[in-house]
Length: 104
Image (tube, rainbow, N blue to C red; front, side, top):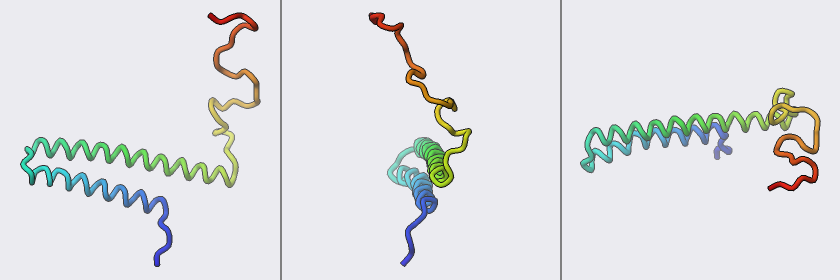
């Protein structure tokens, strides 16, 4: 019995199904009488969506690997947080009113 799949194997399966759909959908559309131009446009649209999803999936996997690495070693100084600020303060960023001046 095979062991659990890795996230890389899962994403490869998703990409294979997406490519299969990019081929199958235009064929089915042609079979049911859609014009060649319509089927081609659909194929190009599906290919574009598949490419964007693949890029997002890859970026998500990289982020997950980075987080896993940070859990083991701690965050690097270059990824300290938003705007790479050090130190703490009660009033960092945002709007401030002048003391007890009513806002209106």
